[in-house]
Amino acid sequence: MTARAAWTATPLPAVIVPSAVSPALARDVRERLARAGYTRFGLLDRGSYDVVEHPDEPELLEVLAGVAAEVTGRPLVPAGARALRLLPGDYLLVRHDRVHDDRPIELVLDLSPATVPGAEVHYRHRGQVFFTAPSSPGALAIVERGPTVMCNHTYVSKRSEGASVVRLTMLLRDTPARG
Image (cartoon, rainbow, N blue to C red; front, side, top):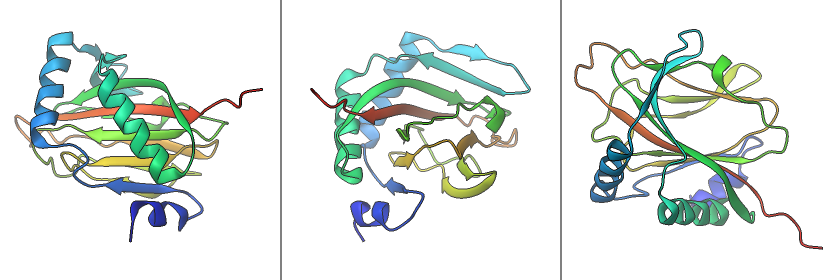
């Protein structure tokens, strides 16, 4: 089944594109993000993670937006991006997520150097998980967000010593109609 067919086969559209980027590209982006410098977010009732707000990756973001437009069949433009790094003990809770009324598309590109067991992104519809993006370096999750869809990044076990989960997240909105 193609990504486009999988996208249209469900009332809550979500799909994973495996191997969307090569290990070499993922490594290069991780290195650029590290040079840009992460900021620690630590409001423990919401999340514990490192973040780069507005990563300077215009070409990559443009390509990812094109992939999402192809899969969804919608004309999309970037509306924001950030990079997250979760280390052992880190997480993002649902209460930290934003609600979207306009059904944007969210992309999560896994740039991690290795698979981290249990480090997943959960998408919830009215509180119930309907889609899981597992730790899978190079994979791209594409999910339609709406007023009933929330997201959380699961806890990275402290037993995963040395683990680093790096994700580039991007929000896309439909291209405004010209008039």
